[in-house]
Every structure is written in structure tokens, then in C-alpha cells.
Length: 199
Image 1 (spheres, rainbow, N blue to C red):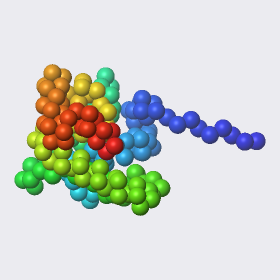
Image 2 (cartoon, rainbow, N blue to C red):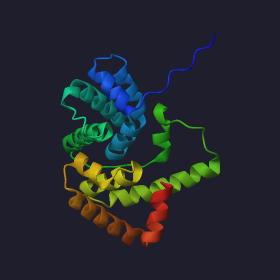
Image 3 (cartoon, helix red, strand yellow):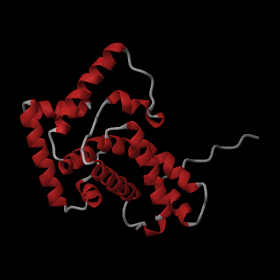
Image 4 (cartoon, one colour):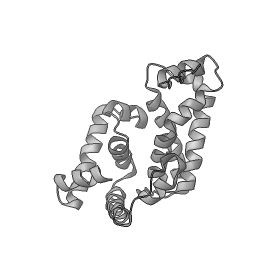
């Protein structure tokens, strides 16, 4: 007699199980958010190995401080906040800021591996990555944060505000300022929209 596969648990179910001290449930949350957390850390730190360490430390901190998680907030927002603050601490210790959007390095991470693109597609990806890299480098770190969280992780203004510790109005203002700055560099809002969509 065949058995039906167990349905995949969503974030809320996993969080509830962690609260009940289910030892396997937190690994489910790691599986769910491994790629997004690594991606966020990589774009902030610009180094694959540092991003892997930062992602691991993010999950360790989340596990150790799980009792402080307020279930009224989205778990993703809380987790990204931990990752964001840890990356800022690392950047402060390094005394230099660098955010890379090199698509080739991002694709090397096991959580993000997909079938390899052909030579023409790879060349186009490198060109797009270089264009986005230049745009991000032109921003202050605080403006860069909101751009990455908005356009790479598609978070709402309220979620971004919760992560970076600003008001929604401040986030909107920073995002508007960053878009204007990038649009001036790339030659208009239309060109900027195409570049960000392709990144």
C-alpha cells in the first residue's frame, strides 16, 4: 500500500514546531531561507566565502535567540534583520564597503545552482552584472541596503523599515533618492527599470 508524501510545511507551521522544541523544524526554516539569506549577505559583503559565513552566523543567531522572535512579525523580516545587522558589523570591522552583483559567483553557491547558461547568455549576464555593480557602487551603503532589499528580495516598504530600523517614510525617501541617482547615471528611469529587471 502506497503512502502519500508528507505535505511541505510552510513558514508558520515550522515556526510553531520550533516553539514546541521540534529539533527538525528549524532545519526546515534553514532550507526555506538559505538561498535568500545567502543572496542578501553576498550583495552586502561582496565575497562568497564571507557571505557563506554570514549566512551561517545568521541562522545560528536566529536559533539561539528564537525565544525573542515576535510572531506578529513575519519570520523572514526578523531573519533578514539579523543578517542585515551582522553584515553591517562585518563591514564596519573591515572599514570598507563593497557590494558585488557578479552573477557568476552567486550562481556558484549550492543553494542557487541552476543549469549552466550558454556562452551568449553568460556574456549577457556578466554585462548586466557589471552595469548593476557600477550602479550599486555609486550609492551610499544605507541607500544600497534599501535598493537590494526592494529589488532583489521584493520586500515591502514596511518590511524594509523593520529590517533597517527606519520609518517607512525614510525608506521611501532613500529609495527615491537612490533611484534618481542611478537613473542619472544610466540615462533615465526607463533604462534603470530595464537594468534592474535584468539583474
